[in-house]
Image (cartoon, rainbow over the protein chains, first blue to last red):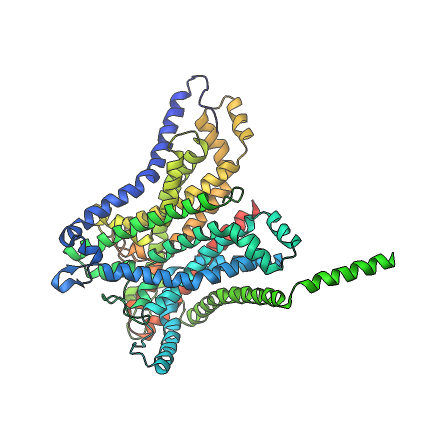
Amino acid sequence: VISQKRPRSMTSAADNTFRNIIIALASVVLVAVVLYGIILIRGGAPAFMREGLGFIFGLEWNPGTEKFQAFPFIAGSFFTALGALIVAVPLAVAAALFIAEYAPKWLAVPVGYMIEMLAAIPSVVYGLWGIFVLIPVVRGFQVWFVGITGLDWTPTGIGLLSAILVLAVMVIPYICSIARDVIQLVPNDQREAAYALGATKWEVIRYGILPYARAGILGGVILGLGRAIGETLAVTMVIGNSSEIAKNLFSSTATMSSLIASQFGEAGGTQLSALIALGFLLLVFSVIVNLLARIVITKLTPVGTRL
Amino acid sequence: MTSTQSNQITQGKSIVRTVSSARQFQNSFMSGLITFGTVIVLIPLFLIVGQVIVNGVSAMNLDFFVQTERQMSVLTGGGGVLNAIVGTVLMVGIALMIGLLVGIGSGIFLAEFSEHPLVPLVRVMSDVLTGIPAIVVGLVVYGLLVATKLTGYSGIAGGVALGLIMIPIIVRATEEVLKLVPNSIREAGLALGLPRWKVTISIVLPAASSGIITGAILGVSRVSGEAAPLLFTSLGNPDLVWNLLQPMGAMPLSVYNLAFKALTPAQNAQAWAGALVLMLFILGTNILARTLAKQR
């Protein structure tokens, strides 16, 4: 902002000190991610060395036989996150459209506010609600579902379906607020041009607004995916934390993060190392997801609507 | 005149008729669907807030705030969460010091040294930090402070973990408000012969202080609900401790244990009371931050 070319004076020494302090503080942010990676690799190395690629692709996780293969939890993270996005994305986009395009201002502001409040509720409170309110409801649905379909899925309420529902509620506000921002940034020309062609309100949205906001919404969805995969305690409290890969939508299973939270207390030796190695996978994944979302938003958004 | 008016009206009508009933139906159907979707999104908020209030109030009493988890009985409940309240306050305090120091420093770097070649990279890294799951930060601090026996399981380790989570929130808030401070103010300071560091610290930062405070409150609101990183760092403690080198309880940890690890209805009821305390604090600070932000 300010040119560095000021006349040298007695103050330049103090200025240099200030500059160095600021750069030192900023370098904490700069190196943090790399430092995180190094610490987790060092902690996870024994498990990685022992299992090799089997750590990522193997199916057996058994502390008793010292076998630590994490595929069931990698799959669990993706199943829950994907399921949550399937539920959350249409609802989040609908709410974003409602706030940005449909609701009058006196309604749009409080509705937007309330959806952001959903993001502020702590994970443990979602988990508590999941255990005592959601699980009984899901169990009731499962008993009914098994009754009419005759499938041999065990209806306990605890498992993949409950985790997906809790996660969906938790990622909706993130996707919704980004979708709302990009929809509000769509130039009014787009709307007016579509109306001038005789389009109905929905046609304006469908052909004038959504194509324009698509990249931003996709970026928001990718960030939501990151949130869903990293989310820990709410999932831990409702998913059952079994070490087996999910066989169906009602199965008890675990995600990478829920396994870390539920087994860390009793873990030592190689098991501890394997949990830290899972943490490293989570770190790598969250970094990739974040960079990807940034690239999608900046590269694919039409010029003039950049966030 | 009347004839042209009626002419326009008939033309208007004929335009309306060209919108086929199928398109009109689709239009109304989508409006309905979008409104319905929004209602579905809001239902969990009302359910969760309502149930936490109803169940929480009925399980709450004075003891809940002045006794510790050590005094809780598995069968009858009793006791309280004073240990957790104190732990949360101490650890969030440490987090706030770390978050403000590094966060404001990095924010100044991004906004005031914007010609520096590392600025884009620091900005990207700060964004990446925002997306790193809290549980990963917990594992990192475990590896850094706990496993190495530098602090062991302790309030300091918990505070550092929460501080690392808070940093990117404060970086972003600081950078945004510093950029809103008009350049003429900086130039006026420099024209008076002030050194650059003094311009930043005594002119630019005070002008941006309300925005930084808002960011700090949001950061506090965010980290006080985090339990995942504390599982491996502060560990939890049923006794009231003030020593930062000892394992320490925290509100979200208590809610987690009382809801998930405990087995009796008496303890589960206390989990709701804990959730109410936590939620009131977090929603309260969140709303406070937003109100402050709006006043600017």
